Length: 289
Image 1: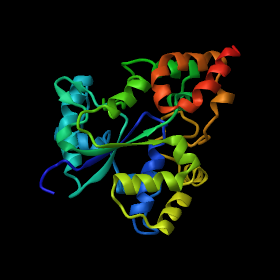
Image 2 (image 1 turned 90 degrees about the horizontal axis):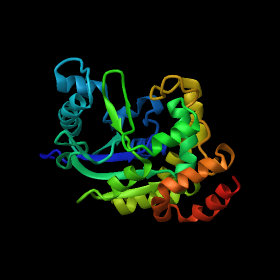
Image 3 (image 1 turned 60 degrees about the vertical axis):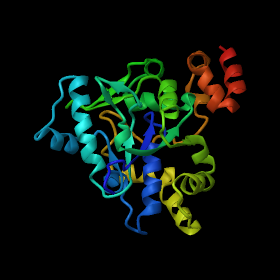
């Protein structure tokens, strides 16, 4: 391809299934036996926080002092990422599709499409708390705060913002071809969900046995075993286990009625659109408090 509109973003709020999706795609598209383990997913996908691309863009080790330094260098690093492969390729991001310091965080001139992986905020909150090394109340506050960011010691950031704003930004980005995968659908109906993604969005003729192998190789149990055996380089410092539960519905045990009520109040319009099946039960649960 002569132009750089090669990136297919794999976008999500943290702990929504991005690693799982990257692994599924790797195991489907790569030859049998050659798909990377969880620590070597960069052999198939790239991430927009990779230090080596920022260093290359800076002409030496990149150490940003603030968000503005990062945004300006990110524009250069993303051009290198886009050009790192000759055709369309997948790039992980946790950032929103916003503008900052006169730069697009997700540049249209480098973007071909996006796959957005979404997880309900009730299950996300305890998982995000473990990811951040925080209590659940703090995690909920972070999910409700429009300026929430994560960053590396060298000043490479993820612009998260609010959970609902993250979803709305990606799904309303002008001119962006995108496809939404709900974590819960992937968990309960992996073959059906992946087949729809591959056929309807990526225009790939699905080979049933190949898809079945990919799903088996990337089951939660298989990935958890990999982490236990090999560790996981993307696990935040201080986090006991990245692959902890991998279930839907854990909020019933992990959250208090007050916490469920706060999440409902904060995100109700987005829940009504994307998780209508959870409205009645969470309302009843919240009343118990």
